[in-house]
Length: 276
Image 1 (cartoon, helix red, strand yellow):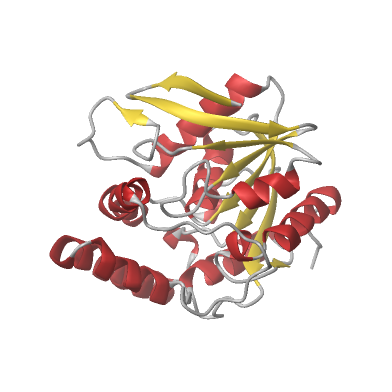
Image 2 (cartoon, rainbow, N blue to C red):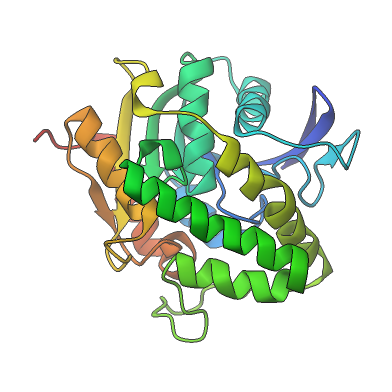
């Protein structure tokens, strides 16, 4: 089921599928509500799965297309989507940028999210200073490449930073392919031009998180151990005094291993994360 909700400065498109407790899925990168269709299909037997197009992507239209965005603004949009679907706290699966949005949602509106699975959050404020500086340089180079050489060159840099080789990925059989059609290209342009600068401006740190929030940090089994997104999840786990859960695949395991990834989501939301 496809719907829209009006928020400050935009109209947000969201989709609802399945039955059971509400699970909000925050997408990574330029992913819109359709990007995790395989994952949502495997989750919909356990949850009412809610996905949305972040403002500026696909069917979520900004009043001012040239206006900057922030992670806090994305979190406010996510809160509006949850309120449109349910009057009870939802669980959330946050993927990369979606995990950063979920962390902001916990700080700004803790009654909206009861449980957050934070898979490799793109949150530089969670890193040690040297790792944060390195990540800032790497992402700055991606932004500069996009401005100077276009989205194709920048996409290659993004994949390299995240330890992804799009030409050689282990995947489950039958996963949906997402070619770079016009809509996906436009989404990638927005992500590179608006969302990545917002990531560099973001100042959220672990100490901002509410003490009682149920957060399950997660990492990809095959993600590079020195990747800043992997390290952000590890540092989050250390701060919360829990163990980072390992999920199938790498940074984009939700796309390459949707069946196994969904099974792990169900498991960790049922049992929570393990104490140290």
